[in-house]
Image (cartoon, rainbow, N blue to C red; front, top):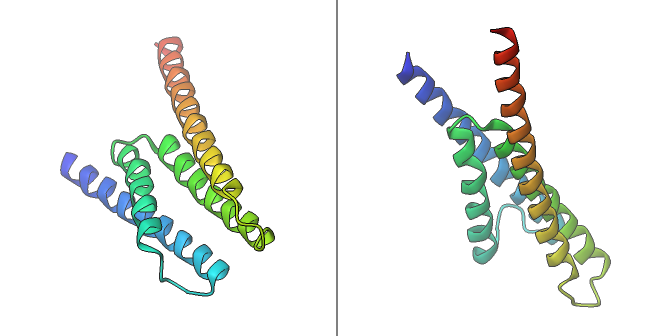
Length: 128
């Protein structure tokens, strides 16, 4: 039974990884008109973020993992929107907003996961 759960967790992690990277590639393709051809430095960064988001999912910390991954995608989307709006004025503003949203996703994910586990622990104590 444990082996089935491990295989299930790995499949969920792989599907999440592929979905995350596909979303990043689609957003990049829409913004830069180069569908599925990510810059190598950008790809390294988002693979690192994907690993940070997928590892908790593999250990059944779904809330943190998914909130972090969604925060990373939203951060990249905001980065692309700001850099598109301010195309003529090169600045790091879009990168800072991206980083800020990723950090917010991380902190929100940790908070939600901790609150969920406290709720489950309290619920089990009340039920017993």
